[in-house]
Image (cartoon, rainbow, N blue to C red):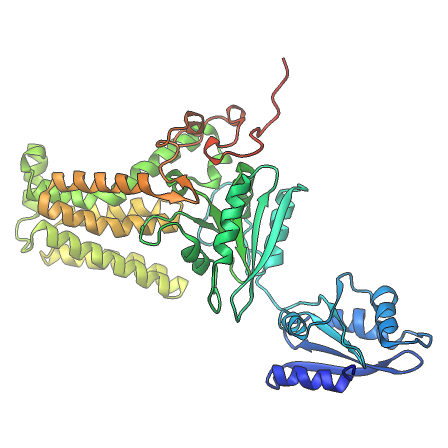
Length: 489
C-alpha cells in the first residue's frame, strides 16, 4: 500500500522530533487539486527561491488531469519547476539528510518517491582578506566557511576540465561534507588513493573542522612538525594543485589542507612568486635564518653564559657580566621565566578582542620587560635575546610551523642547560634524524635534500627565475611533468 501524504509528513515530524524550525507547506496542484506538500528547515533555505521557483509555479500551473501520482511527479520535474537543480529519490533517510542540508523536499500523495530541490541559502561570511597569511603583493581573497564558495574560488583560478572535486560525507551523525580536489592528469594516482583511504577510515560522530581531519590523516601524530599545510589562500591552493599536490576542503571551515609537503614548504609564501626572484630568494634566506634564531638563540645564550665563557669576545663578555650584576638567578632560570612570560603575553593577545589584544601584547611586553630589568630580576641582554627570538618566530609564514619551533625551543634550552653547546649539537642531530625519518603521504619530509632531487632546488631556498622552472617538482612523480611550453628550436 502506497503511503499517504499525511503518513509521510507525520513520519518526518517524528524522526526529526517535532522541531520548531520545520516548515511544512500544504497545497494542491492542477485542475484535479492533487495534494502535495513542501518541507524544509527555516534558516537553512533561500525563502525567495522556494517561493519563486517552487511554490508559485506549482500553484499557478494549469495541469491537465493525470493518470497517476508518478505521472504528476514527472510533469513537475520536467515542465513546471524552474529550479536548475532537481533530483528524485525514494529512501526516507536520504530525504531527511537533504532537508537538514538546506534543500527542499516535495512530497505527493500516495507516492513513495519525492522531489529534492537544491535551495540552501543560509547566511555566510563575505569573502575577506586572509587574517593569518597577510602579504604585501598578491590577491586579497580568502576562503570562507561556505564550501561551494571555496570551490568556486578555485574554479575561478583554474579553468581546467581536469580539475576534480570528489565529495565525501564524514561523520556518523554530522555527515559533514569533505571535498578532495586535484588535477587528474597531473597528480600521481597513488597519492589520491592514499588520501581517500585515510579519509574513509575516519569513524567518529563529527569532524568539527580541518584541524580534526588533519590530526586523523597525518602520518605521525607524535611529531611537532606539520606534515599537512593549512591555508586560507585560494592562490596558495591553486599553486599547489598545479604542482601535482592534493587539497582538502571541509564544509564550515575556511582553511584548506595541502598535501604532501616537505620541511621547506613551511618557509615558502605565495608572495615569493609575485616578487622579483632576487627579492624572493633573499626573503627565503631571511626566513631560514629566522627559523634557526627562533629555535636556538635562547639555548645558545644559556650555553655560552653557563659553560663556554671563553667563546665570548672579551668586550662583549665584560658588557654581559656588567649587565647581569645583581641578577639573582642563573641564565637558565632567567631564560625560562622570560620565555614563559612571552608565551603568556602572546596567548593573552590572541584570546582578547583585537584592539585590546594588540595593546596587551605591546604594552605588556614593554612594561614587564622594563620592570623586570629595573627590579634586577633579569638582565637587559636576556630581554634582547627573548625579543629577537619572538620577532624571528613572527617572520615565519606558517603559524603551525612557528608553533612547532616554539615547542622545540624549550626542549633545546634544557639540553643547553645540562650539556652546553654539546647539548645543542645533540638536539640538532636528533631533530635532523627525526626530519629524515618523517614522511608526508609517502614523501620524505627532508626532500629534496634526502633523498636528493637537484632539479627541485630551483624552488627551495633559491627561488629561480620563472622561465627556469619549466618542470613540476620531481619528488611528486607527477603524470604531466611540463609546467610551460618549451620553444622549439
